[in-house]
Image 1: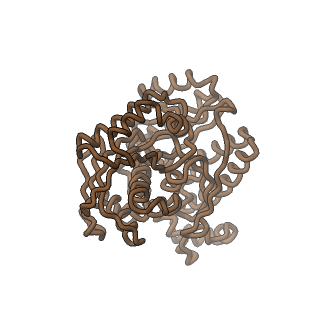
Image 2: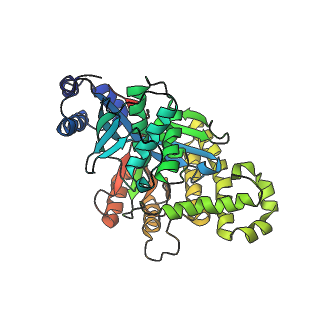
Image 3: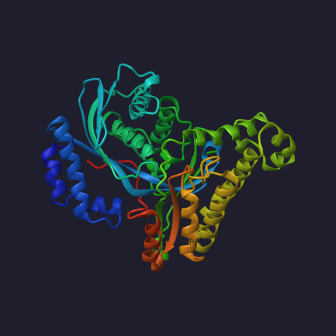
Length: 426
């Protein structure tokens, strides 16, 4: 931590440029400096100058493989990206957490009240309270802090802006009050706990884990509470490809019921076997009992379960392909996962909607523009929001132009994979 004035001078003088280069890929150093200077200015405007300011960052994430497998204790391939939420934070010893995020009302949480509050369900204050409550329960002396944040992680886009915010809050608490003793995996688990118990969303752990750990990671959630994580070194750009996230223009922020239906239907399938997750049910046993499962659950539930079994295998194969540097094999598997998500998991369009087909249209257009090259798939939770496309660099300009001609300027976002997760810069 440093005095705000000294941090400003260090940023402006290029003192953080090496860190910016690692975190933000090809983004210019000048624009990085401007953004971090703005977060300091925002803090000072909101809370005044400080003599021990700390800087924090947590990235968004892109799901590479394993669509809706995490909550079934399955396998996932994911990567942190260069878009992030950043903060200037200062301990205040007031027993209060005050966070002002650019463009939003301030969140104020009284640390003497750590139980979930019904009126906070669905609000960012619930996440803050839940994360702080867990740190306090672990014995860390959380005494309060003030923070100003700003984010360029697209909201409602499947890039996990909420998970990035959770990881940011956990990373701040870790740096200010725990001496960075809490591991990235634990920070991810704390974020999931807050989202499940305080925020009221039955999410899995993939998003928080990818944001907190960073880089490309393969995650196996078989052991509840102790996921196996493997970091994978792979440079997509060196293979002549670019990762794009396409915003279909449909916001998925109000689709909690659609996401909950997936976990609810899969729970019905698991209930037929007296199990808690599909990972506990051998695939052969599932198919042998298919007639009774159909009767007890539904055909859609069965199809969704088949998707989970198949996508778990695909994650293994995709991970092996990246380790071997076999991009054609990897891209073929991406395409297969996308088809399975569309036809079996059925998370491309909202249930019963004949109007909101934005993601389906974007997928069809992307495939046409790729012309048999690369791959594309629905991204993240689905039903609206975004899709992911691997585009040959030589086709990038034409691809972007073709997408934006239909979905509007700025709808095609070029991503770089960030090598680090949630961090304290100073």
